[in-house]
Amino acid sequence: MDGITTECAVVGAGPAGFYCAEALLQAHEGLRVTLVERLPAVFGLARYGVAPDHLKLKQVCSVFDRIARHPRLALAGNVDVPGTVPLSFLREQFHAVVLATGAPQARSLGIEGEGLPGSHSAARFVAWYNGHPDAADFAPGLGCESAVVVGQGNVALDIARVLLLPPERRHASDMATHALQALAGSSVRTVHVVGRRGPWATRFSVKELREFEQLEDVSLHIHAGVGLAGQSAPPDADDAARQAGEFFRRNAAASTLVACNPPHAGRNVHFHFGLSPTRLAGRLAVESAHFSAAADSGLPQSGVCLPCGLFIRSIGTVSAGMHGLGQDPASGAIANHEGQVLDADNQPVDGLFVTGWARRGATGVIGSNRDDGSEVAAKVLAWLGQCRSERRHGRAALQALLAMRSHAMLDQPGWARVDAAERAAGAAAGRPRVKLVRVQELLAAAAG
Amino acid sequence: MPFVVTENCDACRYTECVQVCPVACFHADDTMLYIDPDLCIDCGACVPRCPVKAIYDAADLPDALADWTAINAERAPALPVISKRQEPLPGAAQKRAALGLA
Image (cartoon, rainbow over all chains, first blue to last red; front, side):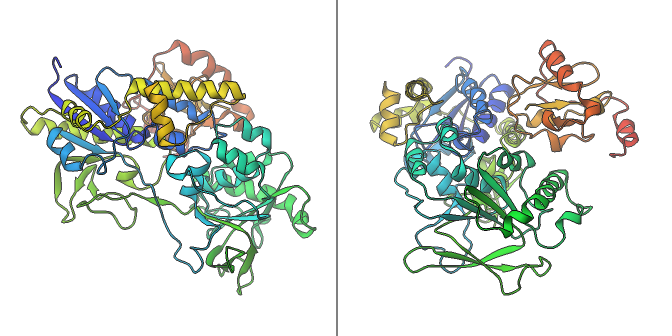
């Protein structure tokens, strides 16, 4: 192609991959980007992580769509690294490779009973309701009255809310059809959101907490231990944590009486603080979750037991790692120095970079990846400037290899056909979209 | 409700916020930034980045700042988009200190 001197591959078509690709394209006119994606669908957690009723947040996908249509970007979906092509192939054929592979592996609590049926990771549950192909055959089991979600971030709130959304709100979301059907038959009436921290030290956003106040027929119960009503935020609390604490203080007064009465006839969400899970009990499946109480929580030091048939741990995720690369034990990120990947011996790997959650661990919101993507793109450009590299075949080599193997690849026009098919099915059903869930369905729609 | 830039930005224009806006909905004039409410997706990523706490969820706007919702809506579309960080205005540090936020 005329004027192209530099071939970059970005692995992972989620927010981090798109923003880094955009920054690379803007920085250098002779550079083109091949955006490699494991699934035959794009947008990563913007499609498969953002809650299905947060449609406004999903409008960010229109930004990614615009980047995907950039004349110097090519999408290569349905291409797994290393399953379809090894990382070494990309590193040989491209001048630089950026990993934007996220943090898909759920952390474990490491407690007794965690493997019982009815105990799931948030990552799996969210993937299921959002129609991720990997969770197409998952069945969470919603035949119980009570669910426990352990975690004090917005993912825990998403899960609790999705479990309690009224039917019309579910219908108006873009949740997967299988989840819509399963939730229509759900017996879950009560969700306990439980965490180790106190009410002034959570990672909940107040914006998302308030959504519970707006859910009709859902009562809010705050089990905040001693004295929350009179407490004020500790001086070291950041603004977001303080606002969440004020939300709990405001609602604690109102919910004290309710908590003493017989269970509310409608649906309930309970917030518990200062509790750490110690074990799950049940004969064939989860029947109860047991917690130890923090010393200053004012709760019985013998601990607390919550009956539940569904237990979801929302305690974070880590990167999947990649063969031969190091991994930061604390954040779970691929080992790197300012985005430059390090090998298992802590040495820089030439031409290999990392961005997004794979770089800094599973923290931050969609927009954090724009900042991150620009920083890493600048690193890539600086490195490219230093190495006077020979011509590489890049995209052409990848496309030739896939064609030789008759491997179906999702390109941008193919994705546009998937998107149009999902929107059309949505329009027919009175929904924003009906997601195609299975890989074969996505590939068939992409082929047109 | 969209997010709104208010008077603390005026004469500071730190622009830390624009770098994390996923939809590039910040616009700038000579003295401050404005958010286009038609583009803002309510993610709130900008709020903790502002060194002078100028950005609010429109739903949380104190009464004294209520006018800023309309000002953002009116001004933003007429001004150029700013999506990359720039140097703050001269005097930003002094204003920040005067606001007690340094």
